Amino acid sequence: MCDATELDALNAIQKIQALATAASYLTATEAERQIGLDIVDLITEIATRVMEVEHA
Image (cartoon, rainbow, N blue to C red; front, side, top):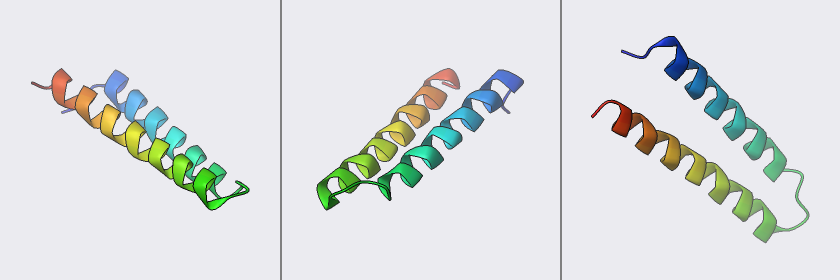
């Protein structure tokens, strides 16, 4: 079960993901859009790994 700090961290990560995804629609080129989506994927991967380590 998550404590309040972990829930706050997850909430912040979700907000970052949402902002990065929204920003990807404002880019000028497909390459920039793809980089933005890659950043979102990295954010998700890092957050998942951190949560796994915290609960290991």
